[in-house]
Length: 395
Image (tube, rainbow, N blue to C red; front, side, top):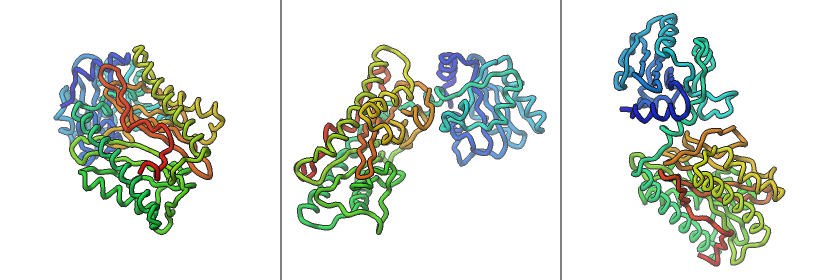
C-alpha cells in the first residue's frame, strides 16, 4: 500500500496539482515501483493512476484488466475503446492544470523519461501542463529506510575489507615473483563477496596501467594484463548484502605496486581528490544552510577543480550517481555533463562522488559514497583516500 498522505504532501511541496502515473506493458518501471507492481506482473493494457495534491486518487483501467490497480486506494473508471480511454484521462484529471509525469524536457534526463511523446501530447491536449516527476521519483524511489542504511554500513565495512584483501594479494604475488593477472584478482574478489553473504550485478574493475585509463574497462580472461612491480592499479568494486532491500557500497581506490609512489601518479591523484572533496563540501554547505541543491550543481563543483588544473578534457563522465538496491539507482545523479540533472538532492538518499582523470598511460578515479541523513547532515562512507597507496609498503 502506498503512503498516500506523504505522496500528496510532496506533490504540494513541488507546486503540482497532481501526479499522473502511466504504464503500458512495463515500459514505465518507475511508475510500477511507486505503485508496488512487480515488473513481471505488468499487464498488457494501458493504465493511468492519478494522485491529486488533495482528494481521492483516480484509476483508469481496461475492462479485461479491471483489477490491475485494485490494491491501491481511489475511485475506478473502466475503459474499453481508445475513445473512452481518452475521455477517461480527461475525467480523472479533473480540474488539474499542472501534473507530473515520468517525462524530461528535451529528454535532458533519460533516467526518468519513461512516458512516450504521444501520451504526453494526449495530456497536454486537455490544457494540462506536464512537468517532470523527477523530484518525486527521487523522493519515493531512492529514499532509504533506517534498515537499508544499516545494510549499507555492513556492505561498506565488508567492501573496504575486500580492498585490503585484494591489495594484499597483489603484494604477496609480486614479492614472491608469482604471475598475477587482472582476472585472478577479480575472481578472488567475487569469491570474497560470496563467502561474506554479498552479491553484485557484475564483477569489479581491476585495471592496470593503460587499462585504468578506460573508465569502464572490464578485464577478460586471455586478454587481461599481468600485474607487476612498478604498475599503477585501479580497483572499482561494488556489492551489497544478499538480503531483502540490500543497498550497494560502490567504491574506487588506486594503488602503486612499489614502496613509494612516483610523482607522476600522485600529482594526478591529488587533483582528483581535491575535485572529490569540493563536491562533498558543496553539498554539505548547501544542506547546512538549508538551501536546495541539484545533482548538476555538485557535478559542476568537481568539474571546475579538474578544469582549472588543465585536465578538463580527461574527465569524461559524470561526477556520481544515485545508489540504491541497484548500483546506479533512479534517484538524483551528480551530473551536469551527460545529462542535465536538475533534480534536488534529498534526505535519506545516497549517491557516489567519483571524479576521474583518464590519460593514455593511466587513469585515476577516487570514489566514495555520500548519505544524506534525515536532518540534512552528510556522512561519507568508503574512506577518503588521501594518496595513492604504496602497495608494497603497506601490505
